Image (cartoon, rainbow over all chains, first blue to last red):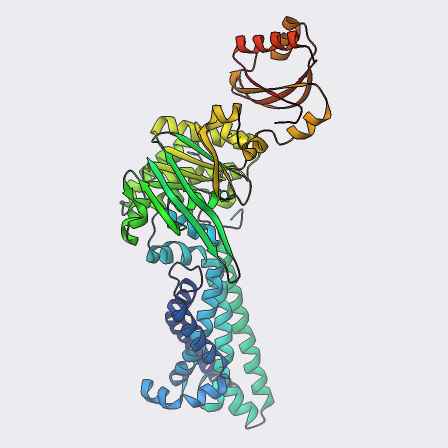
Amino acid sequence: MEINQLITLMIQGTKETLYMTLISTAFSYLLGIPVGVLLFITDKFGIWECKPLNAVLGIVVNIMRSVPFIILLVAILPFTRAVVGTTIGSTATIVPLVVAAAPFVARMVESSLKEVDAGIIEAALAMGSSPLQIIYKVLLPESKPSLLIGATITTTTILGYSAMAGFTGGGGLGAIAVNYGYYRYQTNIMFITVILLVIVVQIFQEIGMRFANRTDKRIKNL
Amino acid sequence: MIRIDNVSKVFRTSTDEIKAVNNINLTIEDGSIFGIIGLSGAGKSTLVRCINLLERPTAGRIYLNEVELTSLNPKQLRKEREKIGMIFQQFNLLEQRTALRNVCYPLEIAGVKSSEAKEKAKKLLDLVGLSDRLNNYPSQLSGGQKQRVAIARALATDPQVLLCDEATSALDPNTTRSILDLLKNINEKLGVTIVVITHEMKVVEQICDQVAVLDNGMVAETGAVKDIFLSPKSKIAQELIFPKNKGIASLQNKRILRLAFDGQSSFEPVISNLVLKCQTMVNILGASTEDIGGKAFGQMILQLPEDELAIARAKNYLDSIGIHYEESDVDGN
C-alpha cells in the first residue's frame, strides 16, 4: 500500500472512530442520565423512594450490562436495521454502542450522585425544594466533577467497544485493524491503528480530567 | 408559635423498634430562643427534624402558628418550610456554589427573580459579617464562616423560625461564641424564633430563654433556663449541669456551695470579697466559668468549713450581690 493511501485510510478511520464514539457517548448520556437519576432517587431513603421501580430498573440495567458486547452487537442486528436501515458502517455501529453503554452510564451517574453528601440534600429539602429542583439544582451541579470523570471513562470504554464492532462490518480504526491486521496479516497496519487508538484515548482522558478538575470548586486555589 | 403535640417517632428495623422520640409535648413561643439539650441518642436531633418534617412523626401533630404541618400535602409543606430555616452541624452548603449563590438558592426555588435574589443575598451576607466573601466557595471558608453563610441562607426566605441542629458542635470555643452572639443578635433584630439543639449546657446558658432537657426520647424537665440551671430537678439535668459533682462532693465531708453565674459582672472579685467580708476560708473544688463580653457565665463549686455562722454570712453576701447559689449535700444531690 502506498503511503498516501495509508494516510487517507488512517484519517478516514480516525474520523469514523471519533464520530462513532462521540455520538454514541452523547446518546448514551441522553438515556443514561435519566435512568441513573431514577436509580438514585428511588433507592432506599431517596427523595422519591419507590422500591418496586428501583428493583425493576436495577434488574434491567444489570441484564443489559451482563451481555458481552460482541454478542449484543449481533443479537440486536434486526433492531439496528429497524433504527438506521443498515447493519454495516459507522452509523449502524452507534445503535449497539448506545444500547451497551446507556446502562453503564446509568450506573456511572448513579454512583456519582451517591457521592453528594446526604446532608446537602437534607438542607435542600428543609428549604422547601421539590424533587425536581433537587435534581436540577443540587444533585447534578454538585456531582458535576464526578460526572465528568465518569464521562471520560465512558468515552474511552465506548471507544474500545467501537473497535470491536470492526468484526461485524462497523467502521473506524477497529475495522481497519480487523480487515488489514487480522484478515490479511498486515501487522504493521494493525500496529498503526493501535497507536492511533492509544493517542485518541490519551487525548480524551487528558481533556476529561482537566475539565473535571477545573469545574470542581471543592479543590482550593482554583 | 410552634406546638409539638404528643409527638412520637419510632424507627423500625427488621429485628427491633427504637423509640427515638416518645410522646413529647412542647410549646415554643414566638421570638424566644428555645434550647433542647440532651446527651447523644436522647432524641433531640430526631425531634428537631420532626418540626420541619424531615422526619415524619409516627404519631402526634406539629403546629406552626395554628397550621398543622403534619396534615399538609407535599406542595403545601414545601411552602411552609420556607418559613422554617435550618442550620446544621456540618453546614451542608452547596460545594459547587459561591457563598452568594448559596444564599440565593432558597430564593431561586421560591421563584424570586435572580437580580432581587442577589440583592437580598448580599444584604444577608452583610448581616452575618461576610460582605467581603461573596464570591468564595465553601472550600475557601473556615468553619465559622461556613456556618455564617448557612445562617444567611437559612434567613433568605424571611423565616419565622430558625432550627439549629448542633450548629456549633463542630466549631472551636471562640467561633462558637461568635456564632451564638450572631444568633442572639438575629433573634433580637429580626424577631426570629430560634430552636437550638445541643449537648452543651454552655450553649443553652449563653443564649436560651427556655430549655427542655431530653432523656431517652422524653422531656425530663422544661422551663426557664435560669430556673433549671439553678435548681435542676431531674437526674439528667443535674448530670448535664454539673457532670463531675458526684465525685467532688463525696470526696469531702464538708459543705458544698454551687454558685451559678448567669450574666453578672465579671469584673467583680466575688471570691476575694467572699473571703474578706465573711471572714471564712473557701476552697474552689471546681469551676467552669467564661467571660462573655464582660459578663460571667458558668458555675463554681466551693467548699466551705463546717461552720453555720460562716455559711450564713457567705450566703448573705452572695444574696446581696445577686449571685445564685445552691447548697449541695454530701451525697452530691
